[in-house]
Image (cartoon, rainbow, N blue to C red; front, top):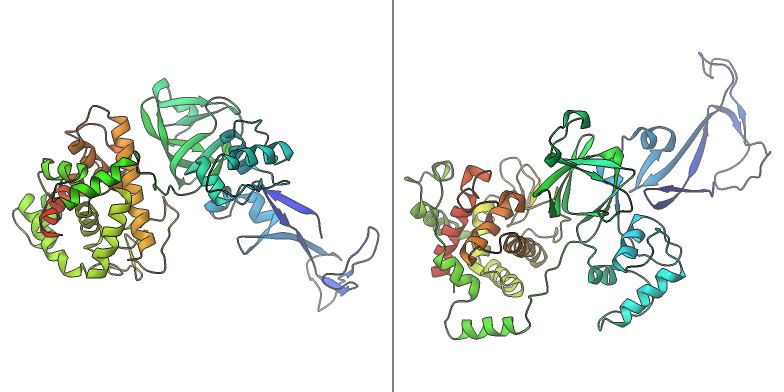
Length: 447
């Protein structure tokens, strides 16, 4: 049938199947009008249903992400994959409807009703005219949306609800600092998150801006709706003069700002839990250096070139990039091992030499675990975390910001709270110190 079905802001075509008929009177695709006979119900007999009277089964379904979903069961019973409950941004133009349109309208500072009409088209055109590299067509495609900052996730409330710091029933929470009221169409909406994770009947997410001093929160799935935006490209290096200054410093043999921070960063190196599997003793800075040295056998000229290119683009020392890859995958040496598929690690959750987690990010560069796209995505994530740590701790030195970014790459920005305790909660409780130590080794060894 031609009647559209709107689900999570997207429009799908419905299909109907007639089963247990003794005879079909119409063919697939044939148009019918109200009152026409479509089939003859099944009767009793050896070839018909044994436990029922004469009847016809009517099955209504649509295709979502290439899968046949029954509207009367799987869809309404909520047994779809969790990703099906998160709306993704599509190309938006006149006639589009949904939360993605609403998010777009909020970015344009116009009435946010979720309907792309002439007013929204005009606002998009006005925005595009003010951008030198956008086509003025009134259509919000990926380039326009990225320019407007539709990154990460936008979380909308279905009704007045609570966002909580742990997945428990609302009436069990008594501490007002552990929850806050989330009101639709208020100044709090939408909540912007770096990532969203499925937790059964809850969504867990990391906010871009903390609430009550906290980044990680939970919400009942039934209470919120989510739109997934784009991954941040991090092409903007800030002051336009800075890249030229950095290049001049490199040409003259001077360290860049973040290379200097790396060189001067205090570190205790790795802990025993990291050095023991490598048969290195004792743990510490020397152990981290030895692991980094061993991993260099996996650093081919092609891989080093890829790391350097991304590092220059994103203002991240190549030594940091190599150290992260060393800690995450031994510079690719353990990819596809320990039950993981080729190119994968961490129980098939982490992709590539820098182990970008598919649970938190939309993976790119899946054609090659050493691809330029993958490396740039990973270092873009690191660069964004570095900026967030710097903003959250404006009094910290560059050295501590850099180590905090390393910690955030492993356990999230919300784990970077104090200088003394930032490694707590990371893998083996040493991630930041170990990566810094390995990077200091590579700072001396990599040209």
